[in-house]
Amino acid sequence: MDSVAYGKLSLSDTLRRRFGITLYLYYLDRAAAPPPHVLARYRDEEARLSIPDGLLLGGTLPTRPLRKVRAWIELHDEALMRRWERAIQGQPVSKID
Image (cartoon, rainbow, N blue to C red; front, side, top):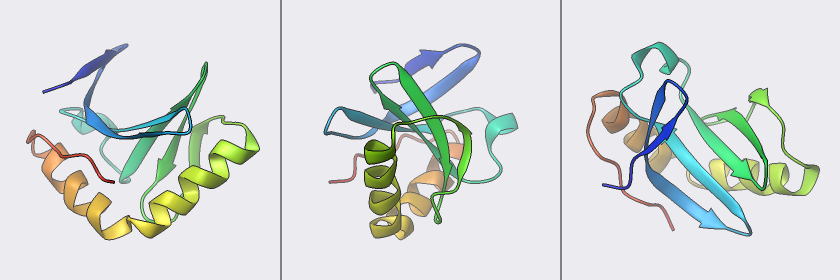
């Protein structure tokens, strides 16, 4: 599994890498669990966006990458929720194309 340490948080496998944007689900961090969300990284910036609506929960991304991430979340909301449920149970998640 390709887990990444981020501060005190552990992150799940990478969900998606495209256009310089990397998306993750939090893994084994019950405190960060609600609401369902993804972590998006682009260059030196990162943001947490809710699933399924793409609401910005924290952090920042430039406008264009933020729009791409929101569109991707909307397109894959059901698959993201299935993976979210697995991640909060401490199970590995698979990438989404």
